[in-house]
Length: 237
Image (cartoon, rainbow, N blue to C red):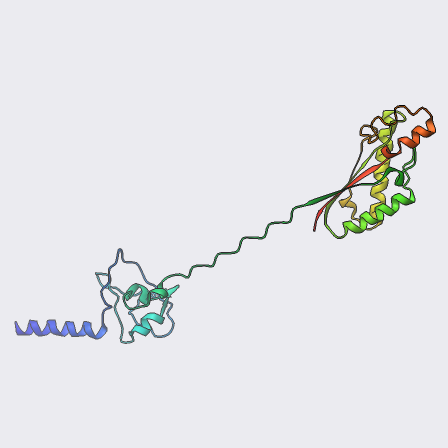
């Protein structure tokens, strides 16, 4: 009986020399894998997994101390977060909250700067050749477009009502193409001024104010505002 008691006391002393971590509550026991660097305060196996008792307590080594439990790492957190959670500071066992990224600045809204170039500054009757006044206004337009983040330039040609619909349609298209060609010659990217269109005589701006003009020369002069190209610049600053 005395021999058996001495044997039990010897076994307890052996366990005490190795040490067990302080008891803590475990919902379930999971493997704690240490990084394997420096002095490890707990007994580990060949996989670097901390050895546990049947009740989930971690076996301590002679290197154990509160500081060692807080500095030896098991992945993202100190190994003591699992083995001695009542000793290691709580803030060391919680992942830092990532700072919220600021919302991206809204993209600038495209702005449409619609410019109607005066007919008498662009084309003579039955012509698709730019007049000097028209070239000057397009020079100004090209300079302004370089200050924008340019998306597209639209050029829409128009004619007066004199002549056939088919002829006027072709003439309006030639006028729009002449404007595009000139803008490209002034440094506007060709693919930014690609869109040209002819409307023929369908969209006059003179209305019926010339209906009572009988003299042809006077009528041509009265209808001059209809002989135009409307240029629309779309971009953003």
